[in-house]
Amino acid sequence: MPRSIRTFMLGFAVASSQILVPCARAGLPPTFNATLPPCIRLVGSDGVQASPSGAFQVVVRDLANNPMPFVAVVVDLSGAPDLRMCGDQLDASLTLDCAHAKVSALTDANGIARFTLLGGGFGPALTIGYPAQFYCQGILLGSVPVSSYDLDGQGGVSANDLSVWLAEFASGTPYVRSDFDCSGDVGANDLSFWLAAFASGTQIGSCGSTCP
Image (cartoon, rainbow, N blue to C red; front, top):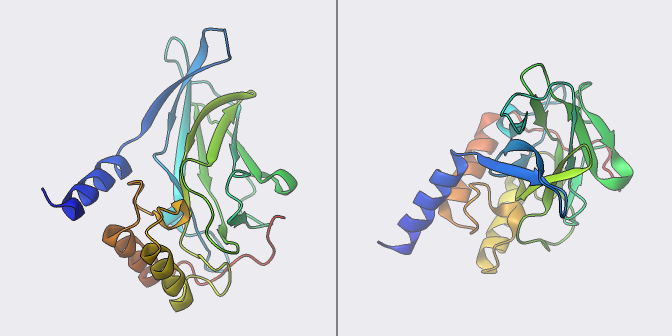
């Protein structure tokens, strides 16, 4: 099977699935289970609300697989220095710790915490791997990749972001911020994701201010 087809099929399979992660402290049995998204995509806004294309959720359950309501789930993006979250997430249900690049949400009665994170690129591409970490009650749930459609962090999703993406694609390095399909590679399918985001018209605005 040609490499391009394998890459597309892998990206589709990963992007349309979720990751079930048992969580444990070192030396102790698991305290609960969590279902994580395969990746996070930072998005822009229309000036009023975040683009829905960035929505994801985390489901937290106990060992008996019962939902855990009203517990805080924290997303830590401090491991991605080439990305910045917006100082205003335009969502009162989220609690932002800008200084530490963390944002949290409470699970609902069904154990579900919902997020849509506003942010963009910052400086040159640096990060590969799985820099976004999820925590609940101080316990690491797992790590996933994090990308951003607004790669230059200004002017919303625009033609200059396409130029940035093309340069990162041409580098041959799988910079995670350009890997929109969660495949672990940067290729043609990621370009189709970016084009859809651009055409949606829901990401015309970048951050008014960014977290440091």
